[in-house]
Image: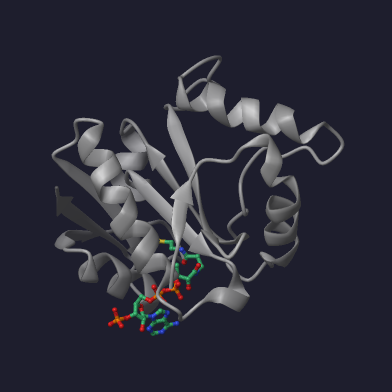
Length: 171
Ligand SMILES: CC(C)(COP(=O)(O)OP(=O)(O)OC[C@H]1O[C@@H](n2cnc3c(N)ncnc32)[C@H](O)[C@@H]1OP(=O)(O)O)[C@@H](O)C(=O)NCCC(=O)NCCS
């Protein structure tokens, strides 16, 4: 498997739209946030770039970078890296979040995306990153642990929600 992890460019519109349309609703998570299908795609690329640079962030939002996993020109998944931890991210969200397009799951893509993201975090000056996942999300637990995640604790994630595992990966 030859997966490339990188940011979007203006040339990725078709791949982005295809992955977005196949994302499905099973997870309750959006493919990516704040995408406006009626606006030119380059505006969305710029929005993500502004977020990366911390420009015009909404209150409470921290700078983040969105990466996408490309295999044979198709987007198989996405990974976001938050450059800082606020109170919510410290407790429940963590530095890194990811998801794989349903039809591409169970092929090692989540693990590979996370693996490829770690040297990027290290190059940005981080010595450790926080990852979290639901206590019943076996796929995410295995992904994090196979990349060296050490369980810190499990915290209450709210009524009706499974406990949230918090892991640190030392870089
Ligand atoms: C969790 C998720 C990211 C895993 O993606 P994936 O590409 O299928 O994972 P991989 O193929 O890289 O598998 C990584 C490990 O998890 C295991 N795994 C993946 N999905 C699994 C499942 N549903 N049940 C059991 N094990 C699973 C794999 O066997 C592999 O284990 P191994 O390292 O021991 O061999 C994917 O199911 C997904 O996008 N889910 C919805 C969004 C989500 O939950 N994101 C994480 C939020 S914390």
